[in-house]
Image (cartoon, rainbow, N blue to C red):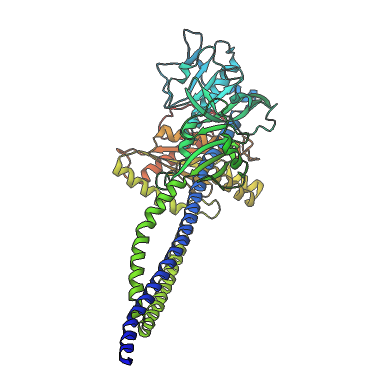
Length: 585
């Protein structure tokens, strides 16, 4: 009997160990399932955070474009506002630019007009073209040319001036037949493009955005920023830029999210619930947001992004302050689950199998010495990671310090522009690029008129403040990322304009000269009564210029001629193609 009892007991021992191993494996699998839930929630939160950051970045770029449009329109309105004495000095002949067509409308001459390079003119027969009105349209044409070619961001499609007398001057390179499509009965004076600038509605003369509107002449839906301008203090018309709604939708697409994570722009809606955009289609006239979305729209905030859940989907709502509107994105729950499932499915299966095997083998491999070695190895690896991270941080800090030091060596401490050393390096680099690509570039040299007299009269602190203001205006005039503004030395500055011919550089120079005059800096010893600048322009001549110094010498010579010619003017190293608005001043 005792022998049989011992045999039965020994047979039970491995069975009990087997049950213990299975129990441990079951506990491990349950732990894995719990951890997978936690990990899934973590991934969902990370995905929502990444989507929110992508939306904010996208809207940041759009808001920068809209603010740029507002500022550009304000500047055009400021230059377009005039007095009777200003208008009398406006040069040129309107008849050289327009002709009367069979329908009685006066338009740009078809034979010489190129909408891709200049503004078009459309004047109905009802407009009385007296001498003052002719000068008015000439001024509008000249300034619209400057702003149309120098002030666009990638979102804007045109620049225009609408006088209250009716008619329009517009730079619209994507619609060359615009001025010819406008008929004798076309009249924009009853639209928001004009009414929003009316001092009765807009007493402060602020930049205002219109509601979405269809322009039958342009054949497009758009929103527009409008600003009033004045003649002798009296409202005389409206200037503005247009933003196509198709471009607005394109600007709102979060490209890194579409398809991979299911983040799609759904609606752009005004505070009153009117739709500006509806998914990928235009809304109907007066169409409102669907009623089921009203509860989540009510929780939108003008101060930042808000996430709300409705049904199976998550909606991200963020403000577009310039348009007084809210954009709503939909984060599809079905697509999210599919994406998470594709990420977690294989991992769950493989981890489950591995955990089960580890559980079955665990009782034989959890010896004390192996645990100790694993702990020591983990500690050593952790220390190695810490050391590697410390080395990476120190290396990054050193690189940042070196980069900051190098930037300081190339920066003018007074104006924040590049200094003479930066000018020499930039000129050499652009010269080498032009020689390889055979693309022209231009240099604009400019000098503050009678600056010594300014310093003598007002003192050096005022002189420094004047140079800082000039530097800021020059930097603002460098519209393209590749354009470079620098301080050459003393009161002399420079602009380097890659891929720009002489005509384009002259237009930039003239715009810059007008922008400096618009600052209205008093100058007691300048005949103009304010601070003005003289500019010299030269473009690369592949036949004659053998070194950057040759091009620079021609720009300096042109600047000298501008000084000798009476100052407050732009000169080039060959006769100008464009008339100077202030010639003879």
